[in-house]
Image (cartoon, rainbow, N blue to C red; front, side):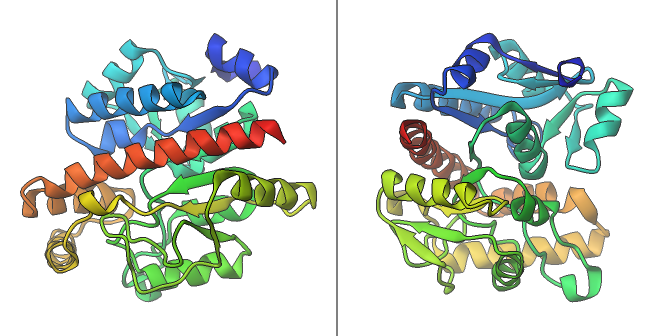
Length: 304
C-alpha cells in the first residue's frame, strides 16, 4: 500500500536495497527557509557534496499529493520558486497527500518519510525545539516528539538560537533522546558554536558515532539521535550581534501576532535582514558542513 503514496527515485531505491549509504534531506529549507535563488543553489550544492563524499542524497518533499524520496533538479527548482507549497509536519502529512497538494517537509515529516523508505541518516540545518515563552504559549516543535519515537539519526548544527535551548535540551532528556556532540563538548547554537549548554556524549569520529547508533537500535531503544555538529569557526557569527538580532525579531513577531508554523520562517527572515544577510551565509555554510558529516556517518553505518 505504501507505493500508492510514496515514490522513491530509482537511484535512491537501488542504494537502499543494496544497503549503500543514503542521506535524507528536508525541503522546508528550500520552500520556507531561504530566498530564491539561494535556496535552490544551496539544495543542489548539498546534494553535490553528499555525492562527492560517496553517499546518495535523497531530498524529500510532497508533489501533487505524492511523497517523493529523491527529487530531480526541476522538482527542486519548482519548490524554490512556488508560492503555494505547504509547510508539512506530522499532523499535515495525511491531508496534504489526500488532497493532492504540494508540501515541503520539516524535520519531523522528513524523519517519518526517511523511516518509511529505510533511510537511517538525515541532514538538516537545525532542529526545532521549545520556543521562548513556551511556559505560556506551549509552543513546542513536533520535531522533538519525532526524535523521541522515530529511528533516524539527525545531523544538525544544534537547535536554532531563536529557541529556548535550555528547555529544548531538558525536553529531549525527558524523552531519552541522546544529544551527541560531534567533536564538541558543548551544544552548538546554530549560528554560533557555543550555547553554554553541554551535550550528553562527545564523539570524535563518524565510526564511533555509527557504532553507538547501531547499538541503540539493536537494543530496541526506539527513537532518533541528535548529532550536534558545530558551524565551522570561520563562518560562525558574533554572539552579541546574533543575540541582538534575535531579540529584535522576537519582539517584532510578538507585535505582529505571528504564531505557530509561521514563527520560525519569519524569525529567520527577520534575523537575515537585521544582520545584512550574514546569518543566511552562516546558515548555508553550516548545512554544507552537516552534509559532509552526514555522508560519512551514512557510509560508516552501511559498513556495520
